[in-house]
Image 1 (cartoon, each protein chain N blue to C red):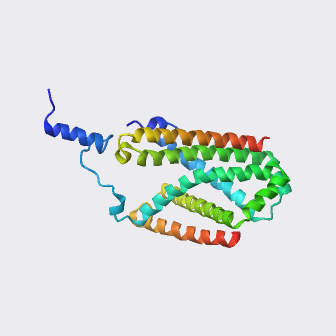
Image 2: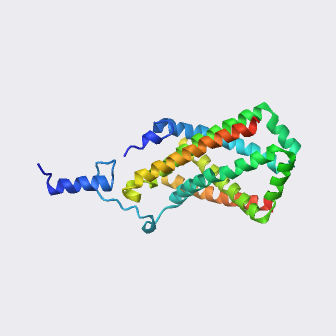
Amino acid sequence: MVTSVTSFSRTGLSDWLIQRVTSLVLLAYFIVIAYQLLGSVDYTSWRLLFNQTWMKVFTLMAALSLAAHSWIGLWSVFTDYLTERMLGPKGNAIRLLCQLSASLALVGYVIWVIVIIWS
Amino acid sequence: MQPSPSAATATTLRFNVRPTSRDTRPVNLDLGTINLPVTAYASITHRVTGVLMFFSSFLMLWALDQSLASEASFNAVAAVLSSPLVKVVSWGIASVLTYHALAGIKHLIMDAGIGETMRGGVLGARIVFLLAAAAAALWGVLIW
């Protein structure tokens, strides 16, 4: 059963590091967003915030971090539970299908964010 | 030459039970029959909340898209977010995100070598659950 072929960076050590670095980017981003939403936000201030270059770059960084972080996290979950031992002979096929669907969705998320902030 | 019965059994066990291991002992991982420590529940919850956020990211991206498209769609999203059912969903996403973040911070603290013992792990898991419950209550107050 070869599982490393669908991992994010092909090695556990760099997956481990990427998972932690991306977690810090996402934590910082969600704190900024929560701070904005808890203040009195209207369309003008919200639009002005996302018109600024630093916010566009920060949002893209968060989207890339979300994709990498989710890929690594879901890979860990899939390779633990969607296996031949847990699901029988079809386990590997089911896992690869889920991995493929999740990966495509994550690439879609990143493209969607790019369209949102640069259109 | 046919393998001896014991070798065949070992091969079968290796393939069916632990495909990547030379270890041929059977495993019992029936989670329903194992009494799990609080650290295990913290870990499972971290995984479940992670998977939930993979799906809720779609809703959050939709809200971001609509909120930035035009003033009319911004107001439409604001109206959707103030409906009773969507308030429950928003509260759920915020609470799930907060739990995942707190459990992640606990991971980073443990990576730094703090609280790596069983006692430290149990204490850390309890603190995460307590803080997450407090945060969920706080989100409730802020949303309603």
